[in-house]
Image 1 (cartoon, rainbow over the protein chains, first blue to last red):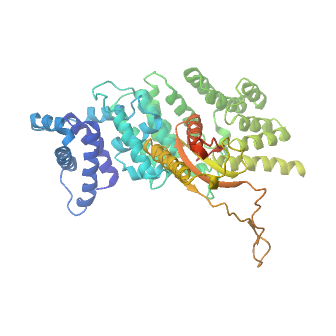
Image 2 (image 1 turned 120 degrees about the vertical axis):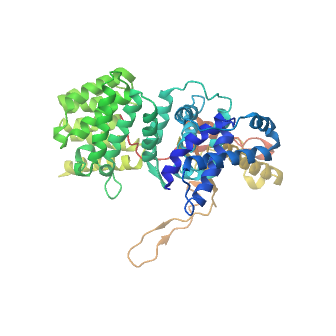
Amino acid sequence: MDEVVLRTLTPTVIGILVRRGADFAAAENAVQDALVEAVRVWRADPPRDPQGWLITVAWRKFLDATRTDTSRRRREALVEVEPAPGPAPSVDDTLQLYFLCAHPSLAPASAVALTLRAVGGLTTRQIAQAYLVPEATMAQRITRAKRTISKVRLDQPGDVATVLRVLYLVFNEGYSGDVDLAAEAIRLTRQLAAEVRHEEVAGLLALMLLHHARRLARTAADGSLVPLAEQDRSLWDTRLIAEGIDVLQAALARDRLGEFQAQAAIAALHADARTAEETDWVQIVEWYDELVRLTDSPVARLNRAVAVGEADGPRAGLAALAEIDPALPRYAAVGAYLHERDGDPVTAARLYADAARSASSLAERDHLTRQAARLNAQKCR
Amino acid sequence: MAKYLLLKHYRGAPAPVNDVPMDQWTPEEVSAHMQYMENFAARIESTGEYVDSQALSPEGTFVRYDGEGRPPVTDGPFAETKDLIAGWMVIDVETRERALELAGELSAAPGAGGKPIHEWLEVRPFLTEPPTITE
């Protein structure tokens, strides 16, 4: 039984325990205990019905914990009046769990941690490793999150947008430690998409698939960033791209556009071009117009300026850039790129150096520094 | 979440308001100071914001490469001029505002006379992995 399959069962089992009368925190703890036991005994003695096994063991763990905890007498009484459990449809429970873990009363970081644990079935240690914080810190973050939502009833309708924001955050965290958060985000979003027909869930799934498809090509062997135009497109995962495009087209056909669909459409146009020169920049600008209309996001405007520069020439790009707040991250980098294309390497070099100083990631800073150095070296020749 | 380094300086930062060297505090005042730091760390661990902290000796040595096969040259401590790092704490917080707020609290650690030392702490964001999606 592989670990991912095991983790897939987690939200269902938590949901069933909650419906039988366990509160969320107790159910979640009991299921974690059951998962640990599953890892220990299943290798030698795999059960015929893994989900049934997990429900039975988790329920037993919950009862044990409840009985040993004198402050939980109320729950014990609840257990006694609870009728014998029958087979349970699991779909709604899992969905509720997504909504609960992404509840708006939680800070984004807490919602992310709780989602990875309760819906993703990751251990606290795995989540702590992925976020490069001590296990004790992550354990506290999760405990506090559980306390925050302990009063929230599971039957309240959830907000899909909040869940999507949390999954998006997980995806963007990428890869560190032994857990690939991007792959985990895709797995969870797939699971969500299978349970709820919502065009933006599909939009986010498509977006993730299309970006994930280019992952191998995004960095060189030494870890440095490779810009889109210079990426080796033979490294792109065509199977993921095809799937992403299918998912996106089905979503767009429902004619309820949202920001994730618009972003996915842009990613799809990039993924569709066999060479950088074949990129359909005119259509990309149109999608950025949609994205700006939907979100009014300054980052979308900034990226639109790049696309305008490609579609209508660097002068037009610089004109679009002039309407944006210069304090925006990456503003100088975009300006540098457009000025270089406009034949002004001196300004471009200066702006690349400015951009490098305010970069928030090491790979980005190194990339921008190299761009500045390249232009300065040309000048000297 | 983003990680920030809170840097504590022996020297190099502006002077704290309650600027009495630690060796002139009473032992109780020193203990109270240490306890404050420990409590602070425990508290932000409980909020899920603590990452790491470490105190450093003031004895720093500068080293450089000085040619093939030759020993590295150490120039001894620049005791009078160099910026000395006393220690650090790494936090992982939701916002920059929260990082500044926590640094402010840490700076309120009690010193001589049991009063806050109001020392200056340097707050530096960590460089991170680039996000996968930037649209």
